[in-house]
Image (tube, rainbow, N blue to C red; front, side, top):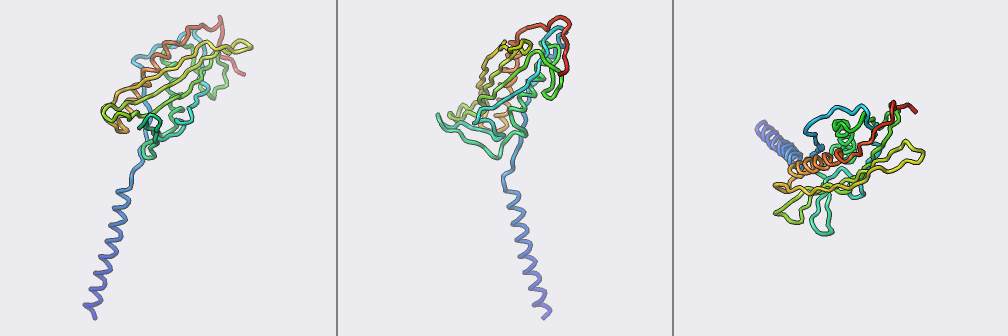
Length: 216
């Protein structure tokens, strides 16, 4: 009786260990979701212009196909796929809006760059649109990171605001391999090129004499 009891415990023990081991393996083999952020820094920082415009990046939209945080891959002429296991930590349009504000601040083209929630009144506002952000994998041997942005600057000092600048920028960066890490590196490189061009394109309008940020 005692030997039979011990044998039963051993069998049950192995059974429980097998179940637990199986559960651990299942959890370990389950795909992990990875989150990324966009990074782009200017090569140099220029002090803010004393008589430059007062700028606020108010709005940054995203085209419907690129408004999600999930990565997008183009695998055919009219075929786009989303990747639920590789995604941005926050919406890419929000990340690009924040980076745009920082680049304008560091470019020396403005006397002040206001936060979107600021109660101060800017002289000019920037609006942007994320037109495209995807991995172009149509040619598996030559993958590319594609990013396209639109920028619009409005002078809001007149009663009727006027558009002082509008342009689209597109970069298609070759990447070493068709992986999420390589794709993000390509997007970062493309974003840096676009923001470098954009801040250099900002019209050199000067604030009116004695003009300072005003509260509403």
